[in-house]
Length: 431
Image (cartoon, rainbow, N blue to C red; front, side, top):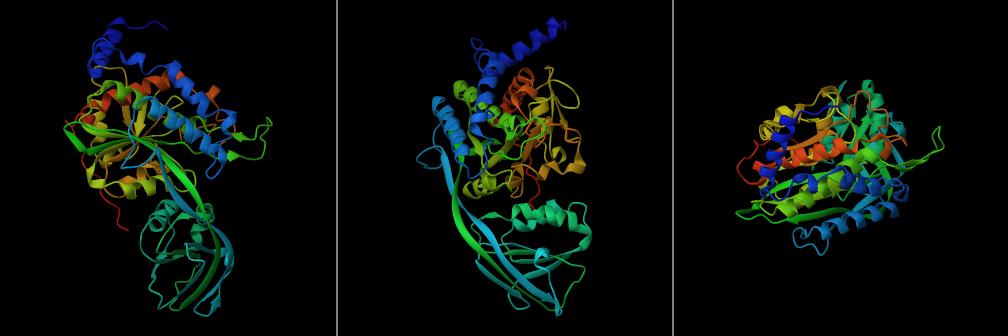
């Protein structure tokens, strides 16, 4: 394809100015060769799909930590290394029984999010009872209750039976919690109720990988760049005989972007705000890594969060474009786009509102507490052929376009990193 020389000249000058040093082009730091090196490692068969709780995800964490060390990142909030470790409670269901107004309940219609081995709920146990009628956004709204800090008994109308069954995949593990959230699938909204639920509990350790570049004049204000490094592991062989869910796009691509941005800003050395680079764990099983992270950082001090998820394929608008989830919830997108004036790249609002993508990635954990936290993606979620399949491999990705997207994120975030722009806060979720 013939290239427009004037456009290339404009973009090159723009990139050099963004770097702050005319001697060094951003292309020397962020390029397809370096993107492929990182992406190839994270999505290799050797990583065996980076499943949460597996030894394989630890190898990925080792690689990410080594990259942070190479770029001279510091540890986060007094940590002794780049691993932000925490424990999760794994729950093995033993039994559930109970009744609504004397009518017995079927155990398969009860889901309990709890870290109590033995839980009893009745009219005097202090659980707020809420009836959830037919709800097209059931999973999204249900997870708001799950991530709350209150005790709930949620009666789920049978019209939500499909979503109710999908919710079961989130209940096998949880962060340590003082509250309980119990869902019961029923057409009844009882006056009297009694439930007894038992689990076998065990603990397992997980780690986010976090590194920082301290700011200069605004050291106590943070800008977070994130992606998740976990995926689905190994499953049954597909039609090609492949059993490994490599997760090249989901989300080795986003993690690659985080590592490239860390390298870029560590060489630039002019960030006024402190930059936090984090690879989250356990996104695929309920965003537990970002939930834990959100409780370790003061959300009022986070100026913005740019979460990066699935940028390995072209967007619906083609190359040099990406969309921002929850675009209308703050002016982050407008700030980023304004900083790209004169370039060939453009950000767009999320074209898939029915998919509720704003709540389906790690940005949701910080957005819930008011941070202008958004996800940048190119994934065609109405027709992404390799999504959550063994075929999500590096050969399906566009390294050149990935590099352009990462450069666009670096350049467009410049005024937020420098402290010149501060995006408006998003509305906190009521929990």
